[in-house]
Image (cartoon, rainbow, N blue to C red; front, side, top):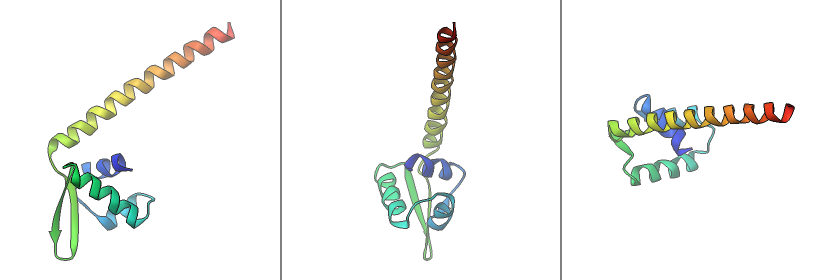
Length: 92
């Protein structure tokens, strides 16, 4: 869930309401996740009246997300190719 929240914030700052609309999670649980992300320094907050807006704390957080996505894509593709090769071997 934290990664999903970070991905949403990569699109731009969001309020709790906007985050809740985008993820299927209870408000209290989202609040806990945001507290953890703030505590680690990955997310920053800005208050505008009664509304709190969340955003990624630095551009490097977005770079980290993009790098992780690339690594996971390559790993997944590699696993898919290995699985296809194993199926071919079993069929022979």
